[in-house]
Length: 185
Image 1 (tube, rainbow, N blue to C red):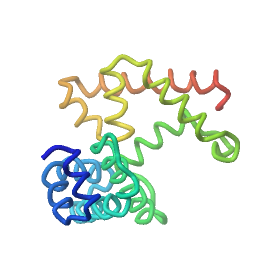
Image 2 (cartoon, one colour):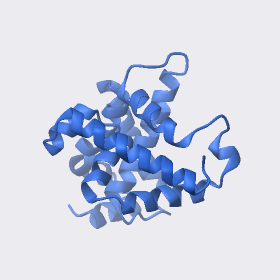
Image 3 (cartoon, one colour):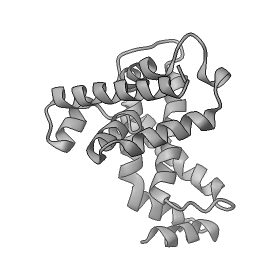
Image 4 (tube, rainbow, N blue to C red):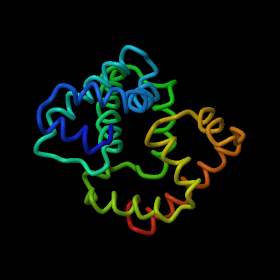
């Protein structure tokens, strides 16, 4: 079923919308959740919560890119669930590693949210990502948006793990430099 038809089902409040969403996007949402949570049951719960959030968002919202809309919801729900589970303990999984890698680029002793206009930061990062060659942008998004492991990214693109790690390191350096030039560091 096409995305427009699925979205129309949500707008008509048809429960078929959820089953059609699960059929078409269930594996995609599950992969995002699992990359963050590393737990089958928690990932499945995040996917079901994604469907409920989509149900509650439509109407009034009519997403243009349905896959991105669902991915963003899944990612937010999964990160929130992960934060709740790891509030007392830290370290060891892919989300910790990915966030630690990015921390070097964007954080300092003060909180960015306290100092900067969040929309300007997002605009700057989006512009930066748009300036990257397609393969570098995709590798970056696999790592820092979908929270995939370096090993999984290497398999996806048929690269060595060291090539992926090196590419990510160079991209983070470029990002840090861009953020410094824009006054975000």
